[in-house]
Image (cartoon, rainbow, N blue to C red; front, top):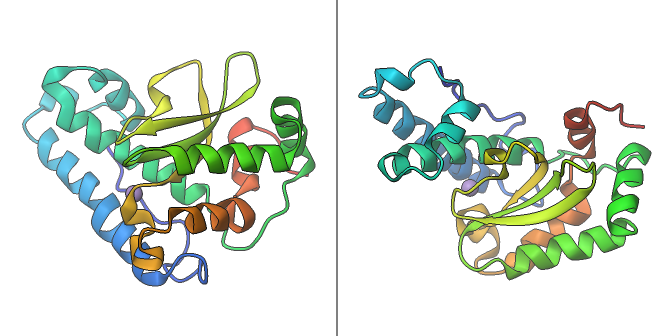
Length: 202
Ligand code: MN
C-alpha cells in the first residue's frame, strides 16, 4: 500500500530561497506525478499491492521488467526525504549532528564544501545525499536520475538535495550553484537528520 506523499510545509514557506511557484510545480506536478504514475502501474500488478514503498523500491531495483515501477517508486521516496531535508527557518547545526560531521568531515565548513562540490559536479539529473554507513561514519554520495541509496540496506539516508533542473530552473534558470549555496547555508534541516538517527537534537 503506497501512501500519497504530502508536503510538510506550505508552498510559500521557503521563500526567498525557493519560490511558491517552484514548490507548486515540484510537489504538485513532479512528486505527485510520480505517485499517480506508480498507482496506475500497480493496478496491473496485484502481486505488489501489499508492499510498502521501501520494499517496492528494493524489490524492483535492477530488474529490467520493473524499470518504470522502480523509477516512480524511488522518486516518491527521494522527494519525500528532500522535503523533510528542508527547514522553513534557518537552523544552526545542532551539537549532536555537529559531532558526527566533525568525526567524518573535519568540520561543518568542510562538509558544506564537499557536499556543494558533489552537487555542482553531478552531470545531468540526480541527487546528492548525506548517508550513514554501517561503520557509523557519514558519507556524501550522488545518484543519477531516480537512483537512491535506500536500495542499499547498509546505508541510512539522512539528508538529500534534488539537483534535477526542475528543482531550481524557475527560480535560478541554469544557476545550479546558487541553489546549492542557498541549501547548504540556509535550508538544511538538521532536526530531521537527528530524528532519523534516533537522536535528540541539542
Ligand atoms: Mn525533483
